[in-house]
Length: 472
Ligand SMILES: *[C@@H]1O[C@H](CO)[C@@H](O)[C@H](O)[C@H]1NC(C)=O
Ligand SMILES: *[C@@H]1O[C@H](CO)[C@@H](O)[C@H](O)[C@H]1NC(C)=O
Image (tube, rainbow, N blue to C red; front, side):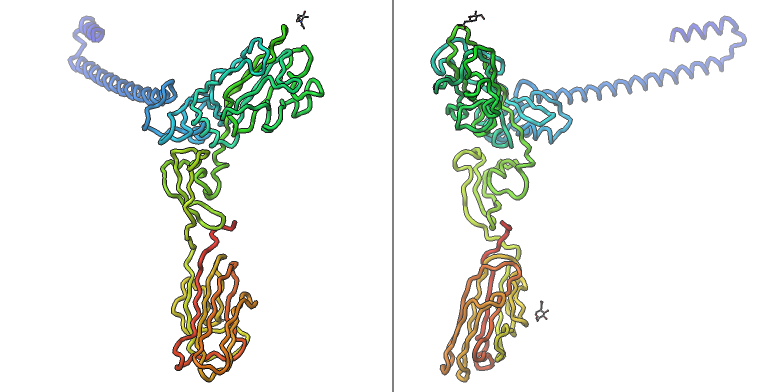
């Protein structure tokens, strides 16, 4: 403003006569336009700045989810594994994350784990990851260390249950510090149930063995671990325990490290679990455990795939799949892809032998499996079917014999003797039919009389009792 005034003043003083009032007015106007534009820019800048602040708050909010403190309960559903977090957001980078393997709605509070987002593996941290020295002591298990995980045992059990594979590495650097010598076990580890285990790699829990013993590459031929050999050398046994039902390792025990030059150093890896959930979730659920892996959390009655039928179970999702009464079997569900039942009658005589008996009146034919004109029932689905047939023979008829046929083969028959009047004949049968199987009645002897005298007393019924919903 000042500059402008000086400028204007200058114009007036240097050549006051030539300066016209219009020109001054023009300059004044230009100045006002510029000032207005500046104001506009300032407002725009302020708007941008406040938008930026909102973004910053949002970003900060997202990061705080990943803070040292667990997220407040009941706010948002945490992923149950790192694999699930990675599936939900493939752009996440590896680091510490809060997850809730036993489900947000029930069980223990969330746990903070390391997520390897390259592989989707979940790693549970503990207090014994660095190399540790058992010191010198002689008797078996005279040194021990309990492992404290940054997760409750229930949460770890849930994680293991959700995962296809879990493993934990263990390394023992040794000089004259045997794990086992002369039949004496100096060292062992305790599994998740507290039971001692003497294998140091793989999943064969029955024998004392290390990775070199599995590969038959141990330092000495007659030992199953490098550290078990007599050599006074720096040796190492490194292995990965893959029997997930025993993990995590809860305690390490060592001994036999009393010799002057003995050293032993143990290094325990994290509990690592790889949960390719999609591999577990394929197809129909067959148990509460399948439903649980699929993310169901509300207790209740659920339908599952049984052998051939649909089954009903009660799922208690407050428990883990490994706990008793997690799943209670209720029973079979009567599911039919389509109802099938018929009721047909005759109202004519029949004398033709050895061909399927046709019927005349169709009272019910739900599912259209019965062809009334051919008299042939064709099973629309595999399953169990019930058939019943009844009729009355009139006075004039000779002995009458009727056979029930499955795909043309005789199954059962009914007979009414010669001479009597108004004798009834009847047959019933339950059949296990494959889809497309044909059932019919065939007159073998005598004659069927169903005219005005007997008034629709020749009746054939059938219905589907149970259908094979699943192929196996
Ligand atoms: C212990 O190590 C020292 C130094 O390597 C060696 O001189 C000594 O003989 C060793 N003692 C035994 C009992 O092996
Ligand atoms: C019933 O059977 C008759 C005689 O075999 C046949 O002509 C007819 O097409 C069948 N009807 C149906 C619906 O399959």
